Length: 445
Ligand code: PLP
Image (cartoon, rainbow, N blue to C red; front, side, top):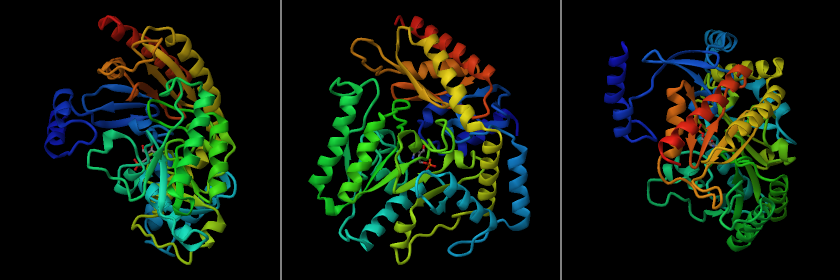
């Protein structure tokens, strides 16, 4: 189909998500037709530098990787799908063993799913089933945090506090509550980062006491939150959270869906904070976006406490998806891409800060590994956020200049594939500074 036909088919038959249908009508859909490395070409023939790893931060090895494609092709020919329960495939078994080797602490048992939301559902159900079979049979409540994103399905939405995806009357499961999350740069009381982190950990403890420790099954948190751009907590915050959960017999579920498999310069972000989750979720960069795949991990002791884990999905541990993930992990290990992400990410962060931190509408520049954010403000003193479309305008301008990044609340987010070259990072710094300068000038800011 030519580009006009493709766009018109897209209007007619796509229920667009997360953007108003009217916005797609005016801005047009963006249909990626081919890609190689960190570049992708859309249906109008525009070549874009993809600094968002296919918008979702999943595409961690770039487009057109022949080794991964070949692994998937060969697996599909040999045995594409084994079904569920005890019917496994070779790549499913070897992948589980490999991620048990990479995961922090004693996480050793793996349950595969098809994405991040399904991983959240599975983790929460596992936590509740474990509590039911051990010392806290009445525990059913889960606690999560303000601004959390754990997925769009109803169970995951229950623990999510992102109004953009909560456009239905209160989706919380019975007994669910939220506690404060440590935000970098801005917090409601203008406290120092350390004091606010302590306040947030105390809030969790108080909430467990309020809900009744015997009734609380789990606390779920992202180690580094995406909301308003790459919120890296203090090390002591997550260590206090770990200690509180242990003290009250509340399972700590760490959501590594966006942070796992190299984004932050470690295999998992939990390693930066020296914490061991009881249950950990992952998806996205696990298969580098070559196949829909996610997983939930836990310790032997938790798995062994269940007479049977009553949970099944048709496509769990799909052989072709697992073959893709095995190839993805092999490439990341062989090419040393994760330590490289830590190194070039730190250089990129320093260059980005130098180029944009002084600009009038920039409040904070932060990041870890190859995950960075520029947080905007209309007043550097009060750190007030823009309530208009200024952040989106910067993102749009960067895209017009050929570089894809994302707007996330008050911030602009940059999350390139781990194979990104220095020249692409340098270009992104220059384009980001240009776009911010132009938008600020046009708007008299
Ligand atoms: N958890 C986190 C931290 C995420 O960032 C996401 C997706 O962005 C999800 C869960 C949901 O994953 P999925 O979109 O694969 O359902």
